[in-house]
Amino acid sequence: MPNSLGKLFTITTWGESHGPGVGVVVDGCPPGLPLTAPDIQTDLDRRRPGQSDIVTPRQEADAVEILSGIFEGRTTGTPIALMVRNADQRPGAYDEMRNKFRPSHADYTYQAKFGLRDHRGGGRSSARETVGRVAAGAIARKILALAGGVEIRAFVTRIHDLAVPSAVLETFPTLAEVEATAVRCPHPATAAAMIDRIKQVRATGDSVGGVIAGRVRGVPAGLGEPVFDRLEADLAKAMLSLPATKGFELGSGFAGTLLKGSEHNDAFAPRAGGGVRTLTNRSGGVQGGISNGEEIAFSVAFKPTATILQPQQTVDLEGHATELAARGRHDPCVVPRAVVLVEAMTALVLVDHWMRHAAQNRTFKF
Image: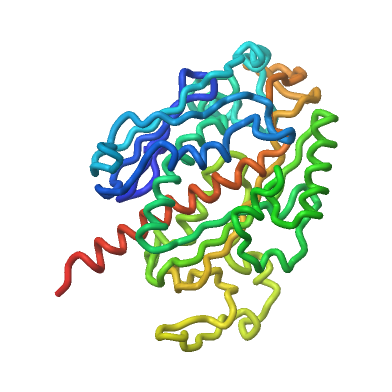
C-alpha cells in the first residue's frame, strides 16, 4: 500500500497534521533488540517544530508513546506501534484554504485524486506525517549500529545560493558539528550566513530551499538487488517520498556527465587486511545497484516551502481565479529539520536490504 515502505522491515505511517496524533507501525523488527522510548525520542527531538527561531513556531513536544511490540525493554518480534499526540492545533488558521488551492502544494492534486481533502495544514500531505518515519528510523538506526557498526550522517550543504566550500563535501562530520548550529551545517561561517538568509526571507513572508548531503560508512559490500530494487533506486525512492524533495544524486551525480570514463572510473585496489577497495568514490558506494563497501554518498534537493505568507494567484474549488493570502505557522526553510528525515529514510532502506541479503544468501547454505 502507498503508506508503507519496505519488504522485510516494513513501516506504515498514519495520521494527519491537525488530527489527534501521528504515528507508525513497524513490522519485521528482529526480537531481542534493546529499545526504550528515549532511544526514539532523541531523533524526534531533532525533528520537532519550535526548536529554533528559523523554523515553524508550532509547539509540539512530540513525546513518543510505545503501544506494542516491546516487553521488558526488548522487542518481541511482533509489530511495534508508536504514537505521538498532536497538541498545538490551530485548524482555524487554514479556513481560507478550505476552498482555495495553495500554489505548488498538494492541495489541488489531493482534490483531483480523492475528490476531497483535509485542508487543515495539508492533512496527510503535511510534513507532520514524517514523525512516524523518524520514529521508525530510530529503531532501524539502532539495529544497524548494534549489528554492523553502521554510522549515518546527514548535513546541510546549501541554502538558497549559499553553499559550503567543496572540501566540506568530502568530510564525514561529527554529530556535534552538525548540531552546533540551528541550520545543521557543519561549516560555521556558511551556517551563519544561511541562518541570516532564512531570517531575511521569513521577514518578507517568503521561503527558500536547499540541499542535504547523506553519508553512510560501515556498510558491507553486497547490499542491494541487481535490477529493480537497486540500492540507489530504493534510496532515491525513499528520499523523493519526503515532502518538498525535488532531486536525488548518488556519488558524482550530474557532475559525472562532464567526465570521461577514464576520469570517472573508480580504480580497484587491495584493501589492507584483505578484501577490495576503490581509490576514488565517484560511484558513491554503489555499483550495479549493490553496495561495494565504500562510503555511501548522496545528496537530496529540497524546494522552497510552498506555503508562504504573501498573496499569490490561485483558483478555488469551482475553478475561479482568486488570490490566497496564507496564514498558519510554517517553516521558512524545511531543510534544517529535514536532516534527521534523510538519516531516518537511509536507515530504513539499509536495514530492509540487509535483512533481504541475509535471508537470500546467509540463511540457506548448500
